[in-house]
Length: 118
Length: 113
Image 1 (cartoon, helix red, strand yellow):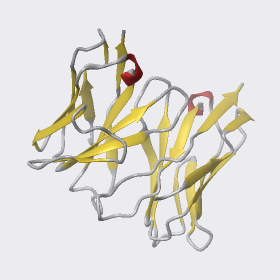
Image 2 (cartoon, chains in turn cyan, yellow; image 1 turned 60 degrees about the horizontal axis):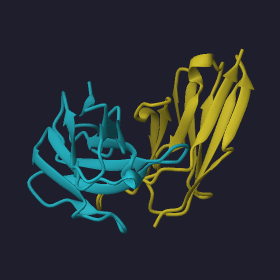
Image 3 (cartoon, each protein chain N blue to C red; image 1 turned 45 degrees about the vertical axis):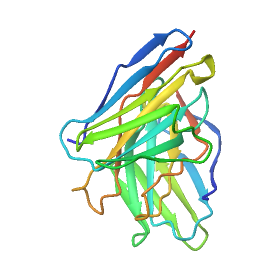
Protein backbone atom coordinates (compact mmCIF):
# COMPACT_ATOMS: atom_id res chain seq x y z
CA UNK A 1 0.00 0.00 0.00
CA UNK A 2 0.79 3.74 0.04
CA UNK A 3 2.15 3.95 -3.48
CA UNK A 4 2.75 7.25 -5.22
CA UNK A 5 3.52 7.45 -8.92
CA UNK A 6 4.88 10.24 -11.08
CA UNK A 7 4.75 10.77 -14.79
CA UNK A 8 6.88 11.23 -16.74
CA UNK A 9 9.96 9.78 -15.07
CA UNK A 10 12.20 11.99 -17.16
CA UNK A 11 11.72 14.74 -19.70
CA UNK A 12 13.96 16.79 -21.95
CA UNK A 13 12.58 20.01 -23.34
CA UNK A 14 13.71 23.16 -25.12
CA UNK A 15 14.11 26.43 -23.28
CA UNK A 16 10.88 28.41 -23.24
CA UNK A 17 8.51 25.46 -23.35
CA UNK A 18 6.22 24.29 -20.56
CA UNK A 19 6.36 20.89 -18.91
CA UNK A 20 3.64 19.16 -16.88
CA UNK A 21 4.43 16.56 -14.23
CA UNK A 22 1.73 14.37 -12.71
CA UNK A 23 1.68 12.94 -9.22
CA UNK A 24 -0.84 10.24 -8.29
CA UNK A 25 -1.61 8.41 -5.08
CA UNK A 26 -2.53 4.94 -6.34
CA UNK A 27 -4.11 3.24 -3.34
CA UNK A 28 -5.05 5.99 -0.94
CA UNK A 29 -6.62 9.40 -0.91
CA UNK A 30 -4.54 12.48 -0.31
CA UNK A 31 -6.04 15.88 0.39
CA UNK A 32 -2.51 17.22 0.63
CA UNK A 33 0.41 16.63 -1.68
CA UNK A 34 3.81 18.26 -1.61
CA UNK A 35 6.25 19.17 -4.36
CA UNK A 36 10.00 19.14 -3.82
CA UNK A 37 13.01 19.96 -5.92
CA UNK A 38 16.38 18.33 -5.50
CA UNK A 39 19.63 19.41 -7.12
CA UNK A 40 22.53 16.94 -7.47
CA UNK A 41 24.07 15.90 -4.17
CA UNK A 42 21.73 18.17 -2.23
CA UNK A 43 18.79 17.68 0.05
CA UNK A 44 15.13 17.97 -0.88
CA UNK A 45 13.72 21.47 -0.81
CA UNK A 46 9.99 21.96 -0.42
CA UNK A 47 8.53 24.07 -3.20
CA UNK A 48 4.82 24.07 -2.42
CA UNK A 49 1.98 22.36 -0.64
CA UNK A 50 -0.87 21.27 -2.87
CA UNK A 51 -4.33 21.13 -1.35
CA UNK A 52 -7.25 19.43 -3.08
CA UNK A 53 -9.82 21.92 -4.23
CA UNK A 54 -7.91 25.02 -3.17
CA UNK A 55 -4.89 27.08 -4.12
CA UNK A 56 -1.43 25.78 -3.46
CA UNK A 57 0.78 27.29 -0.79
CA UNK A 58 4.23 28.20 -2.04
CA UNK A 59 7.43 28.39 -0.05
CA UNK A 60 9.33 31.62 0.12
CA UNK A 61 11.31 32.26 -3.02
CA UNK A 62 9.28 29.93 -5.26
CA UNK A 63 7.52 31.74 -8.10
CA UNK A 64 3.89 30.66 -8.19
CA UNK A 65 3.44 31.92 -11.76
CA UNK A 66 6.33 29.80 -12.93
CA UNK A 67 5.44 26.62 -11.06
CA UNK A 68 1.72 26.11 -11.52
CA UNK A 69 0.11 23.53 -9.26
CA UNK A 70 -3.31 21.99 -9.66
CA UNK A 71 -4.82 19.47 -7.26
CA UNK A 72 -8.11 18.59 -8.91
CA UNK A 73 -8.85 15.32 -7.15
CA UNK A 74 -7.92 13.37 -4.05
CA UNK A 75 -5.47 11.27 -6.05
CA UNK A 76 -3.92 13.65 -8.55
CA UNK A 77 -1.76 16.76 -8.36
CA UNK A 78 0.07 18.33 -11.28
CA UNK A 79 3.07 20.64 -11.44
CA UNK A 80 3.59 22.69 -14.58
CA UNK A 81 6.93 24.36 -15.12
CA UNK A 82 6.13 27.27 -17.40
CA UNK A 83 8.64 28.80 -19.79
CA UNK A 84 11.32 26.44 -18.58
CA UNK A 85 14.95 27.55 -18.60
CA UNK A 86 18.17 25.57 -18.07
CA UNK A 87 18.31 26.61 -14.42
CA UNK A 88 14.99 24.79 -13.88
CA UNK A 89 16.72 21.51 -14.69
CA UNK A 90 16.40 19.41 -11.57
CA UNK A 91 14.86 16.33 -9.98
CA UNK A 92 11.24 17.04 -9.02
CA UNK A 93 9.66 14.80 -6.42
CA UNK A 94 6.13 14.75 -5.08
CA UNK A 95 4.79 13.26 -1.88
CA UNK A 96 1.30 12.54 -0.62
CA UNK A 97 -0.03 12.43 2.91
CA UNK A 98 -2.09 9.38 3.79
CA UNK A 99 -5.18 10.58 5.62
CA UNK A 100 -5.81 7.17 7.09
CA UNK A 101 -2.30 6.56 8.34
CA UNK A 102 -1.82 7.05 12.05
CA UNK A 103 -1.85 10.73 12.82
CA UNK A 104 -1.99 11.48 9.12
CA UNK A 105 1.51 12.88 9.10
CA UNK A 106 3.25 10.17 7.12
CA UNK A 107 4.31 11.25 3.65
CA UNK A 108 4.93 8.80 0.85
CA UNK A 109 7.12 9.87 -2.02
CA UNK A 110 6.94 9.35 -5.73
CA UNK A 111 9.88 8.08 -7.78
CA UNK A 112 10.74 11.56 -9.05
CA UNK A 113 10.86 13.25 -12.43
CA UNK A 114 14.14 14.34 -13.89
CA UNK A 115 13.80 17.50 -15.98
CA UNK A 116 16.50 18.65 -18.37
CA UNK A 117 15.99 21.96 -20.12
CA UNK A 118 18.23 22.58 -23.11
CA UNK B 1 12.07 27.86 10.42
CA UNK B 2 13.44 24.53 11.47
CA UNK B 3 17.19 23.99 11.22
CA UNK B 4 18.12 20.37 10.68
CA UNK B 5 21.61 18.96 10.63
CA UNK B 6 22.86 15.45 10.10
CA UNK B 7 26.15 13.89 11.10
CA UNK B 8 28.17 12.46 9.60
CA UNK B 9 27.72 13.63 6.02
CA UNK B 10 29.42 10.47 4.77
CA UNK B 11 29.84 7.13 6.48
CA UNK B 12 31.71 4.10 5.27
CA UNK B 13 31.40 0.79 7.13
CA UNK B 14 32.32 -2.80 6.52
CA UNK B 15 29.55 -5.25 5.77
CA UNK B 16 28.15 -6.60 9.01
CA UNK B 17 29.13 -3.57 11.07
CA UNK B 18 26.66 -1.13 12.60
CA UNK B 19 25.99 2.40 11.37
CA UNK B 20 24.64 5.33 13.33
CA UNK B 21 23.45 8.64 11.89
CA UNK B 22 22.47 11.53 14.12
CA UNK B 23 19.96 14.26 13.34
CA UNK B 24 19.78 17.50 15.30
CA UNK B 25 16.81 19.83 14.99
CA UNK B 26 15.95 23.25 16.35
CA UNK B 27 12.17 23.42 16.69
CA UNK B 28 11.15 22.07 20.09
CA UNK B 29 7.56 21.71 18.80
CA UNK B 30 8.62 18.92 16.44
CA UNK B 31 6.75 15.77 17.33
CA UNK B 32 7.16 13.39 14.39
CA UNK B 33 10.56 12.05 13.37
CA UNK B 34 10.92 9.99 10.19
CA UNK B 35 13.98 8.65 8.43
CA UNK B 36 14.07 8.26 4.67
CA UNK B 37 16.39 6.25 2.43
CA UNK B 38 17.09 7.52 -1.06
CA UNK B 39 18.79 5.40 -3.66
CA UNK B 40 20.42 7.02 -6.67
CA UNK B 41 17.86 8.40 -9.10
CA UNK B 42 14.87 7.46 -6.96
CA UNK B 43 12.49 9.16 -4.57
CA UNK B 44 12.92 8.88 -0.80
CA UNK B 45 11.51 5.81 0.90
CA UNK B 46 10.26 5.92 4.48
CA UNK B 47 12.18 3.32 6.48
CA UNK B 48 11.23 4.11 10.06
CA UNK B 49 9.53 6.82 12.06
CA UNK B 50 8.91 7.68 15.67
CA UNK B 51 6.57 9.97 17.51
CA UNK B 52 7.41 12.20 20.43
CA UNK B 53 5.70 10.04 23.01
CA UNK B 54 8.12 7.18 22.34
CA UNK B 55 11.85 7.07 23.03
CA UNK B 56 12.86 4.19 20.81
CA UNK B 57 11.46 2.08 18.01
CA UNK B 58 12.93 -0.95 16.30
CA UNK B 59 12.12 -2.74 13.07
CA UNK B 60 14.38 -5.70 12.39
CA UNK B 61 17.86 -4.28 11.66
CA UNK B 62 16.75 -0.66 11.88
CA UNK B 63 16.07 1.38 15.00
CA UNK B 64 15.45 5.02 15.82
CA UNK B 65 16.09 6.66 19.17
CA UNK B 66 14.78 10.05 20.23
CA UNK B 67 16.09 12.53 22.78
CA UNK B 68 13.56 15.35 22.86
CA UNK B 69 15.35 17.23 25.61
CA UNK B 70 18.51 17.47 23.55
CA UNK B 71 16.54 17.78 20.30
CA UNK B 72 18.15 15.00 18.38
CA UNK B 73 17.25 11.59 17.07
CA UNK B 74 19.38 8.86 15.59
CA UNK B 75 19.11 6.09 13.03
CA UNK B 76 20.78 2.81 13.91
CA UNK B 77 21.40 0.11 11.32
CA UNK B 78 22.84 -3.19 12.50
CA UNK B 79 24.39 -5.99 10.44
CA UNK B 80 24.78 -3.67 7.49
CA UNK B 81 24.52 -5.08 3.98
CA UNK B 82 25.63 -3.67 0.61
CA UNK B 83 22.01 -2.88 -0.25
CA UNK B 84 21.93 -0.49 2.69
CA UNK B 85 24.24 1.81 0.69
CA UNK B 86 22.23 4.97 -0.04
CA UNK B 87 21.65 8.51 1.14
CA UNK B 88 19.69 8.77 4.37
CA UNK B 89 17.65 11.82 5.34
CA UNK B 90 15.98 12.77 8.56
CA UNK B 91 12.93 15.03 8.32
CA UNK B 92 11.50 16.23 11.65
CA UNK B 93 8.01 17.61 11.54
CA UNK B 94 5.55 19.59 13.58
CA UNK B 95 2.24 17.85 12.95
CA UNK B 96 -0.65 20.12 12.14
CA UNK B 97 -0.20 23.55 10.62
CA UNK B 98 0.76 22.19 7.21
CA UNK B 99 2.64 19.04 8.20
CA UNK B 100 5.71 20.18 6.33
CA UNK B 101 8.84 18.08 6.46
CA UNK B 102 12.19 19.82 6.76
CA UNK B 103 14.82 17.54 5.34
CA UNK B 104 18.25 17.21 6.87
CA UNK B 105 21.44 17.61 4.91
CA UNK B 106 21.70 13.89 4.18
CA UNK B 107 24.21 11.16 4.98
CA UNK B 108 25.83 9.06 2.28
CA UNK B 109 26.24 5.56 3.67
CA UNK B 110 28.55 3.16 1.89
CA UNK B 111 28.70 -0.45 2.98
CA UNK B 112 31.85 -2.11 1.75
CA UNK B 113 32.35 -5.82 1.20
